[in-house]
Length: 150
Image 1: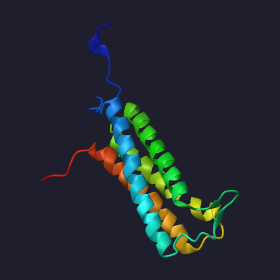
Image 2 (image 1 turned 180 degrees about the vertical axis):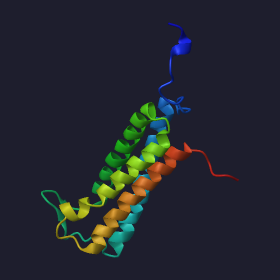
Image 3 (image 1 turned 90 degrees about the vertical axis):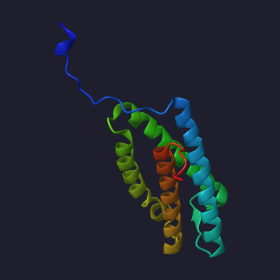
Image 4 (image 1 turned 45 degrees about the vertical axis):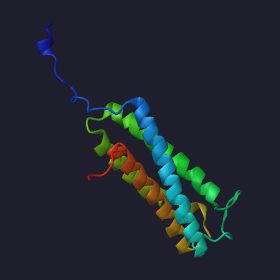
């Protein structure tokens, strides 16, 4: 059988960021999202948006260390998900944006389910932290670390 009888099953692969580059972008996303969330947490704590009287069951209050750990795990999972999608999807960033949006929306259910006694201001602050981490991750991965237009 000649090659002319073969049918292309998938669109040509999009230009790919080198593996090393993707992981360096992931590290940048972790650092930027962590910094942004730490600043947001500290600002929110100053205005009692994250009261230390509300405890994570079996763990204690929400602290900046817990915020940094959660941000790191979430962003790293997002980068790993993007890496997997990028290998299989014809339009990896568009697909990843949809997946990220779905995960972000699901993440909004976590604070009220885990912190049952949390006041609304705390739930909204924690949801803002989720949004910041998602936005920073999407921005870093979508721009590939490019600088803005001058």
